[in-house]
Length: 356
Image 1 (cartoon, rainbow, N blue to C red):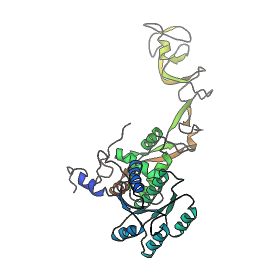
Image 2 (image 1 turned 90 degrees about the horizontal axis):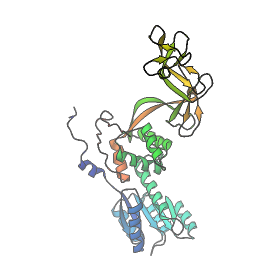
Image 3 (image 1 turned 90 degrees about the vertical axis):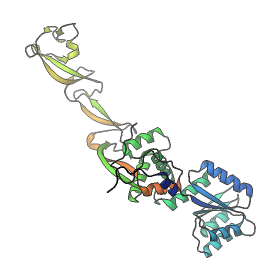
Image 4 (image 1 turned 180 degrees about the horizontal axis):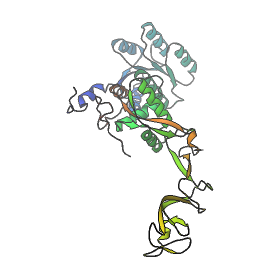
């Protein structure tokens, strides 16, 4: 039986799982090696360790002596070209992904490199550093996460769960609305894939209406007068003058201080059950129609489209939480912080609520 007083995952566990993607950068220019490392540290979200090699021979020696998750390879190297390096990797049966960096005008070389097993290529003089970062991050994802999850979604999920232990679908939608780079449907789709792969858990919370057009969980209920369709309504406690049959809100009967006066006939009413009675809660539209139940439909706050209740989608709202495996992998790939309280043993039983 688990000890309820056992502490949450301690720092030694997080230190253990904070491994790094090991990158070998084969480049003969020392300045380029220094610049690459600084830019990678500044711009990339991956957790990495960079090892450099000054030429192809040095690179092959390090590949033989150690293991790497990714190789960044410059095409123009002294003594051995990038294409020759790829050929030797193939003969050594080393299948580490390689991203080739070529100069302007070397597009044919890049195509040949792809034929020889390079995963991707970057044209140094045309592409900015962001494209290289993206290629590195995509490769890191392929190493550590399910292949059908795109890099942007995984980065966003890592960011969300570095701050929150558990998130429901409607909370994720709220957070996505606060940010221009988060896309709700993409995040949910990615989370569902993480659940299938065992990287996350999903606990059903309740069912909710969703927009049939965009899937948003933010439908706005629109009330209307059943007689004229007006959407300008007020609601209140109503009374009926039993002598004249006048029905109106209680506050309209209370316009004279210390007395109740029927707004229809102008006569005073004095005793409940004799000359007036309480009707209950009623609605009144701008045209003066009184009614007990308005008609209604919905308008989506995300896409602006209106729909009837029988057109709405019914969605089960899940609460998502990363598993130990999920934290292992996301910590391996991305620089995510530790959430305030993570208990991998209790599944959802001890998950804290997120309040906005």
